[in-house]
Image 1 (cartoon, rainbow, N blue to C red):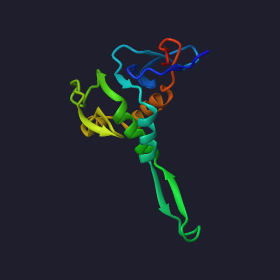
Image 2 (cartoon, rainbow, N blue to C red):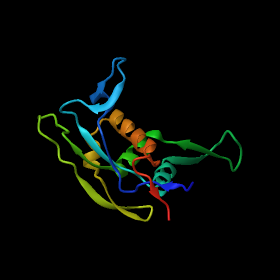
Image 3 (tube, helix red, strand yellow):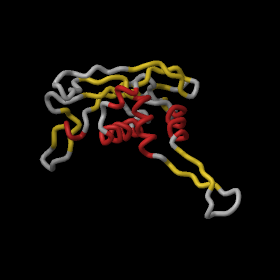
Length: 154
């Protein structure tokens, strides 16, 4: 059996867990409640995900480990923010403090040699950090093909 490639054009529409219907056990069903904010997320290529993870890893000299020893630290918030910045392509029904719908703003950016429309700082700043972490988990988990989108590889 041949392997199937992942779709690079798939857009996932996602409502945060807090805005999903719950089943009898109180678990989110994946179905948004009426009026929920829907985030539109693109799948990221392994190269883009790798770039995000690499950029969120910091190396420093480790004075406790001796001469020429380095210590690596992973920066999870930086990783989540950059994952969402690259994956978020829009939203529906995000409401501001004044009760009005907020516009999604993006701009062009070269990331790891790929020209992308990415979420602007202004768009990212409108999101709660807990939302960003949840959206990043969705993107990280959404980078494998599923049965409904499998395509033959060349």
